[in-house]
Image 1 (cartoon, rainbow, N blue to C red):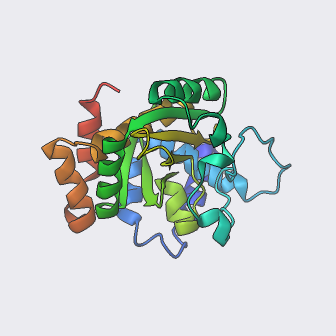
Image 2 (image 1 turned 135 degrees about the vertical axis):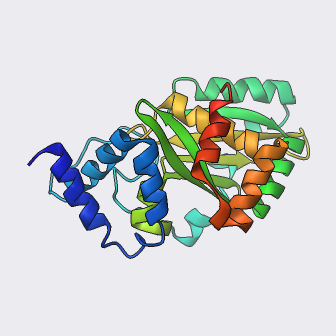
Image 3 (image 1 turned 60 degrees about the vertical axis):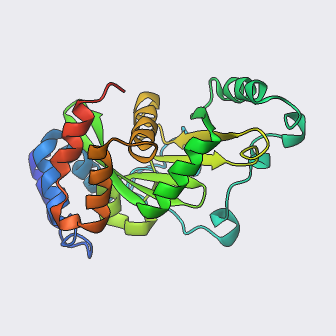
Length: 254
């Protein structure tokens, strides 16, 4: 069976999924904007149905491989992630904001994370707008076009998952990137520590940073055009056009 035939067979199986009809237009749009990438993703789904050896774990986080649904989080995991799970707060609480910033960046060098220190007022705007627009669709540049990535705010985290994964597994779709904001120093130091843990089986460091940059551009002091797109996606989804996201990212210098 050829690659094209295998992809078509997998797509036929995907169409039987309970959520396919709801997202059929988005699937068609993905096929149009990045057909080769789409076929590759669908073929991965077809291959995944054949039992294989357990793939080597290359990430440090709790990410699912390929299109495996993630396990439902228990109450403890679903609560806000505390900073003391990452580093000992007592060792840095008496440092200045600049010193903490340097320590934070040094701590994440050579680790499977992206990291940043966000001004408190920027985080407050991000948080406020995240409550207003809890989900959005970003366009991630790929070699064969673009891949659409769903984002969802949940407490102090923002979860990102490929649209195709979301179409298959809905709320149990595995994340390709989770950005966590630690607010322990928001009031005392006027800073919020951010880090993003990404699945290297799905995206690389540059792509993870690209998504983080887009998050800032749309949720922290967005232009009128970007704010209108957020509003349209949330309030008038029938009028939302995927190509508008692509047009905007093509005008960015990330």
